[in-house]
Length: 304
Image (cartoon, rainbow, N blue to C red; front, side, top):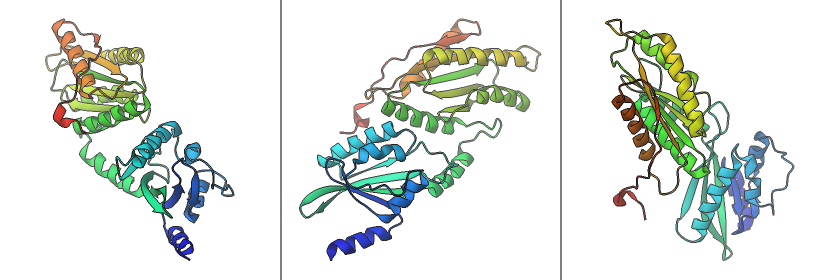
C-alpha cells in the first residue's frame, strides 16, 4: 500500500525523478522521466530499471563526460556524509532549446537501505528570465558588447568550467592609445573583437574606455596569439585617428592557462596586465604574451 502511494506521488510530479542505489543502478523512474528522455531524442520504450545512471548520462546533455564526473564526485561526498545534497546544472543547453536541466540529488532511506533520489527539473523559463535581466545590466551601451560586469561574470564561469573539464582558457586584452574614442570608432573596434567571439565559450567585452577584451574557452596559447595578431592587423586597417589626426594604435596582451584546483582566477588577469605593461614600457605598439604564475587564494577565502 505504501509503495503504491509513494509511486503515485512521484508519478504526479512535474519533475523527472530517478532513484538509484549506492552503486548508481537505477531502481525507479517516474512517468515524466520517460517523457523527458523522449524529448531528448531517446526511445520511450527503453526500460531504465537496472541500468547504471552514469552510463545513461549522454542523454542528459551535450558534454556528458563533464556531467558524469561532477555527478560521481557529488555521489561520493553524499554517501560519505560530507554533504546533504548537491545540485548540478546541465549548462551545455542553449537558451534556444526547450530544456535546461537542474539536477538535485539527496539521500533517501527506504526499508533501511540508502538510495539517492535525483530530481531533474526543467528550468529553461527561469534561465531565459535571468538572461534578459543579465543583458540589461551587463551590456555596454556605447559598443553593444558586454561591459566589465558582464566580462567578470562570464570569465569566472568559463574559468570554473575549464577547471572542471581540464581544458585551457585564454584571455586577450587590447588597449588603444587614446581613451576618448568617438562612438563610430568604438563600434568599429567592437566589431573587430566580436567577430572573433564565434562560440558559446567566447565573449567580446568593452571593459574600459580604451580597453577591449576577448575571453576564449578551449583555446591554446598559440591560437590566442594568432587571434591577437589578426585583431592587431584588423584594427590597424581601420586607420583610427585622434582629434589631432594622429593614428590611434593598439597594444595587445594575452595569456592562457589550464586551471587547477590550487589556481586562482586572478592569475590570468594578472598575466595579461603584465603583458600590457611590457607593451607600454617598450614604447612600441605590439602584441605581448605573458605566462601566468600561481596566485594562491587567501586562507580566509578557502572553504574547509
